[in-house]
Image 1: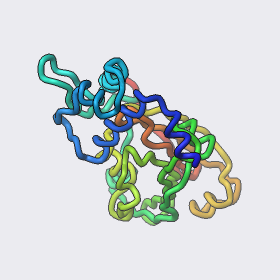
Image 2 (image 1 turned 60 degrees about the vertical axis):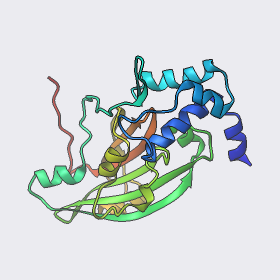
Image 3 (image 1 turned 180 degrees about the vertical axis):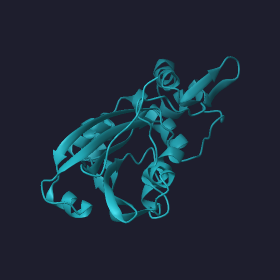
Image 4 (image 1 turned 90 degrees about the vertical axis):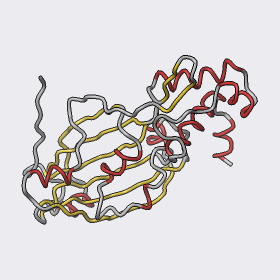
Length: 239
């Protein structure tokens, strides 16, 4: 019942955006494919031309769609945007150091958005989300607990992946190429379950990276990554 109410209260222009984004995320429309015209959307959704125009205009501004004068509206090329911290696969980082990477899957499930997660994903509470918890090892030493929530609209096949062969980051970069990201880094004491997975003492200080990524015009992923403070550091440069 809650889901039906949430859907019914969604603005019509947003429903059109969600439909277009869903078709792209599912792979039915790929880069360069033409999308339905505004007039076709008017007929399909029973809305005014102004409403259909707003949905297409906003997706064009978000670089999900591109308009070509006299030709129509197309799925735009998906491009990475520069950020101060590179969004790399931890497996690639470990291999670049000449070390061996492996991962251990602790949780992979379909869940529901809590009030807090709903705000972070810009969704209604109770909407479906995918959830995974993975421990990454470098030369058999646990160096990261990756606790990730994923928007199914951006990565509908997330739960079907073999995360012993591919990292969530690698899958998401293919399914929903990054548009932007925001992050924070802080030192926090490890909760008991995290401490156990990292093989450190309870309440030991960890470096914690929290990151939110956007793709296809919406929040794609919210992830918290825990690292043992004595084994890990973040580096980078500007300019």
